[in-house]
Length: 217
Image 1 (cartoon, one colour):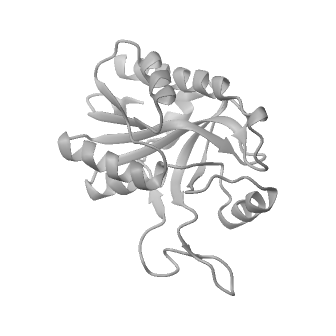
Image 2 (tube, one colour):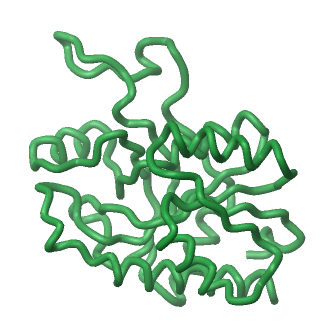
């Protein structure tokens, strides 16, 4: 994973618990900045843009926990985005949901850096890892009906709430982008009792350890 060497990297997380997991994994490694981007696509786009305006970076990585779609990953696994999709920005119509791209108003699919596959392979040494589309939603899925609709519409691996916002900022500053998530729950009916945040955060720490090892090699 030599692409990380000599690269100016910014990692952004939504909340402090995710940030601390990443910092713990990186230990005393000082060549990566780890900052908060806030919760949801709007705040993450705004705060990441501010960070990118203040300092020059080659790569911005959105890291954190996520929900996995059935059959794509298990709790504690890692998902590296093949693309980040703004999944609920659009309009309802008699013919069904129209994405922002269908409406001609902007971009909903954000490409990731070409190194996503090699990154996934490196992570597999520490955590079961997968690659696939990660959805960005303003409203987290909480019903089986929505889960089925999203799975049919996008064939995603996971969902979270910041990736496309961070990707929007990265594209405006012409900076490469990656999204890396560890799984805390399965997408579907909301059941906080089934969430395993500690497990996901421990996996997030292990992913950061892998990144540190690659940068130090």
